Amino acid sequence: MQIRVMGTPAETDAAVALLRTSERIAVVSISAPYPNHGHSSQVRVYVTALLRQNHWEVRP
Image (cartoon, rainbow, N blue to C red; front, side, top):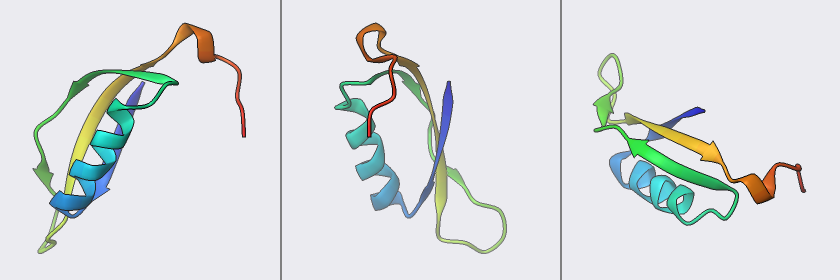
């Protein structure tokens, strides 16, 4: 799956770090940050990830 993370550079760094430590997904790759369109200070990062086999069921 591909996950798009948008926010400030600090926010996207924190979100990617959180995704990397997830027990439910395995992060395969992370793109470089792309600037958002327009005059925004936000960026977007694309994370390619896989669901881990032992965590297929959805839990709250």
